[in-house]
Amino acid sequence: MGIKKRWMALLLCAAMAVTVLGGCGKQENTKPASDSRDESASSADTEEGEDEQANKPQEEADKGSTEPVSLRIVMYGDAGSRNVEFFKNEFHDKVLADTNIDMKVDLVPWGGGGDQIMTMAAAGEGFAFMSTVSEGYAYINKGLTASFEEAMFDELAPNYKEARMGRGFDCAKYKGDILTIPCGAYPSSAQNDNFAIRNDILNQVGWDVDRIKSYDDLMAAIAEVHAAYPNMTIMKGADNLFKGLISVAAPDGALIKDTPISVCVVDESKPDSDEVISLLESDYFKNYCAIAKEWFELGYLTTENLTDPTAAAAAWDSGNCLMQYGNPYAVYDHVLNNVEEADVQYLKIDTLPNLLMSDSNSAWMFTKPEQDKVRDWVRFFDWMYASKDNYMLCLYGVEGQDWQYREDGSVETLTQDAFFYPWMHQTLYYDEISTERFDAQEVDAFIHFDDGAIYSKKVGFAFDETPVAAESAKIAAIVSEKVKPIAWGVGDYEKDFPAVLEELKEAGLDRYVEEYQKQFSEFMSTK
Image 1 (cartoon, rainbow, N blue to C red):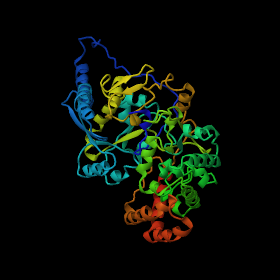
Image 2 (image 1 turned 30 degrees about the vertical axis):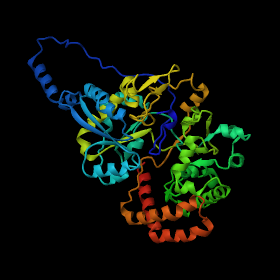
Image 3 (image 1 turned 135 degrees about the horizontal axis):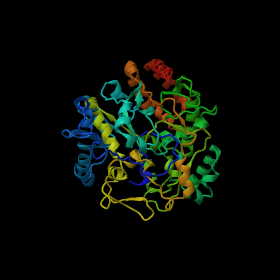
Image 4 (image 1 turned 180 degrees about the horizontal axis):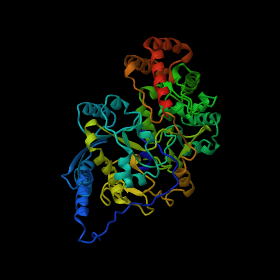
């Protein structure tokens, strides 16, 4: 996959400040070729040695002296002829030979695959799957997940820990338990919180991204683009617009990084506060709805953004869209697939700090039947990061067949099939971003992108909706049908929202917010 495809919606997650570029640090295991003790050692010494051996069954099992351990991964992705073959053959054989793990990989489609995975987990099937603590709370609260001891990683996964470059398990915990194995080590704060904008299009109307320092500047630039190209889509991913414009909707400096239709949010600018904000009842929502309404009336948002968001995505991919939610890669990688002249630049118009919602690019969760195999899973992820060869095999397949190096040292994929998604598992421990292909100063800016970022105080918190399940279902239906059009500018806040808020109240909004506040306060008290 190309660099520009790395950040997909599942996502989640992000990293601490990164200051190291590339390098291989696989630790070599060394031991004496023979025992140097005198062969006339006492029988007591011999008995002591036998006792030590008797106490190491788990250690020997971890080293692979027993029958192969069967593990299964259920991974999002399109099944193609090449990746299916790879997972059954080259990948399977390499993992088996190196770890004595008989690994099976099944692919499920993006989107609908989530329901399939939940059904499989509830049926008691054992496997690993991509998730996060926040997205996986439905599994957690139903008791469907395995947990890990942090000491396992110290014992069994030194390569994994080294490749993650100091990142820990803060974002992998729920109520103190490690429930996911986080992967990757790339800068990824402010994911989808700002904008990636077509600077080449701005240039055509006399603007440049460097001139856009404020919301007024952004609106002036958009006006010029819309006048010159009235049929051009302005925004892909309208549900992320609130994040990019939070400083406009929250002039008091509140830092809220959620969608405009979230029910409960927190102000990240107050890290010690346990206050929960009922967003739909707040001035922040009211202010944003006024912004969205103006955008709609100016033609910058349309009903299509609400009813068919895939159309905006297609417009972006084909080059007929001005901007989308931003990702850090736009700092140095300005390419847009299939649009040769594109110059995609990163745009941040607020002065708020970048927010880290996770300390990993992605994470893996494990169903309850895997509890007896957690040590084997830790061994597998250590194998994935144990060498540059293993790492490249997992992410790109077989060198020369599925990928090759370009002259500038960057990776060129030779197949359309995806393996272990690079954007989920990449680490700067192994990756060296080519300063021949990309501007060295921009690469350096990307590497230090997370410098100064702050961790979200919601890291490790997952709301359990069970006590308010009935209220949650009713609220979700009203939000989808009646709140969302207002937040997208199609409806009118002043005219339509008072009646909608009354419906939300009748559906149990107050009870829902009260329960959220209770759980979040309990969470904050344990930090």
